Length: 171
Image (cartoon, rainbow, N blue to C red):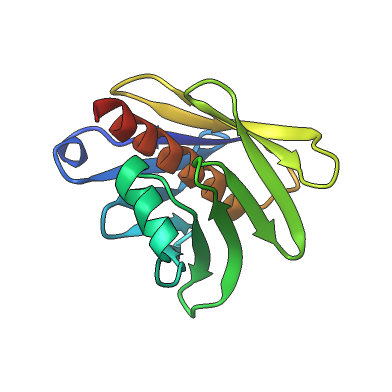
């Protein structure tokens, strides 16, 4: 089981969020979520998460302006730029995950949980949950055959979802 524990200390005062990734009690990497850089590091390898959406249409611009929500595609890439997976976010901040021809969808269960479902039949296969306020952590109950990088990418989606919901609540 993969667990992400939020770093305390100076990162709380900075403009980025960092979670240390822990598997079976041993640290294996981190997730960094910020306005200018999103990345995952596992076993010393760095992976970037970047928005891959092209120019906005007029309708997308209006939706974004009025609601703060629009469709976007995020790509998970290794240091060499090789595409590993993509997450397509709908206008309602719901993701679909694409990797090696497989497609999975997410369903929010409450404010701090994303359930992952197979696209073809809608069956739930696992979830990522968020717990706590300041000393928060995330926990993955995704299938054990999923590589840790993909589980961390789903944790990043949960961070994205939570941060955007908080912004919406403050508006």
